[in-house]
Image (cartoon, rainbow over all chains, first blue to last red; front, side, top):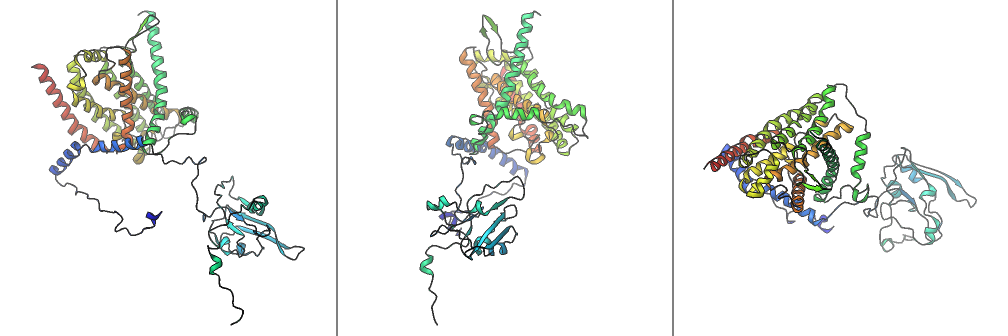
Length: 203
Length: 327
């Protein structure tokens, strides 16, 4: 990774390839043919592919069985997180994600429950429309909706919906303390606690 | 003509047809695997162990695909063209001795369909007729790319055929016979012809690439320029016949080169038979090897190479051979 982050190309081992000019007269062309024929350049190519075959350094990933690791910030199918303290759902039904969604693929319905708190009754995302921009995760004040790593969402039709129950962290995963926080858009950066200044009570 | 001879010949023909049809299929498997390994890929892996049954899957696909005759084509020629390629490829095999003679159940078997006294002439001639497949198929296809491919086929045809003939002429002069069996017997006594005719060997080998249309001279069906050339309008088993013809041709020319230049099957022992198969395997592998390593030449470069470089060399070789034999 280090070598790719180094943008200083000047001292990176780059050098100009020495390309000869094309011969213009027939004698020059003849000389080039003779040189190419007797330097046996073709056999260099043969050796290179044979060497790779003997080394057998296969780079193929046989995909359904093997998978590449994806970054923690990867934006695939959404997830709904739970609170660590109470295992309750984080979503407060504020509707900001529905509002900001630029492809209009989030739709939610809420009601006031018996404890006079707002409760989500319906919540669906149309993955056929979703462009996985991450705005919903960024705008969410509770870090409730985030992106997950599940990218295999092939569907038989263009409208492919996921609902609230599908995205919500299962309760047994939560009990096992196995919920993974999202590190991408909208997430708390590391050492956030130390960087937050307390709001002064008075000026 | 007695019945035993007739039955023996029919059995030989059937065996050769079956073995080389199957080999053509297995050849595609080896080609994919070798190319994949040379390019650090895996090749077919999913159908059967190590993808071995991929051949069967391809066969089922080719056999069951709809055979489309487009409306603009010259139908009779369009239909017969693939048959020409496949049939001539197998016809050429009639004069090739694949193994030394062996005894089976007290019956002496000669693994050659017909030991005709013009063997090599027949083999090269019939193989050359195979190029009428791409030529006619391309011209009948009513497709610009196919037509380009047919034009290239004609150009390739007139270019390499001269080189093949002249390169083979020098060994023929030395052996004094056109039968491939005589070639083999000559080399038992006098050593491999490649030591006395290295130039002819290399020229013949280069021309074999043009003959089979393999990579440095793969310009008749160059995928990245003219789609599939003559095969663009073909589908299903007609295209498959072109394919089988091409691969059978590769196998047969891989037999012919060692028989003419590298001692053939030797003095008829089992070791000699395996040596011939080994040489054949090397030449077949070399066809795949070059495909992974080398770029294609342009049609004009092929004609330049054949007419201005290889043909003069072949003529000089024939003349020198003649003088050496005379004095």
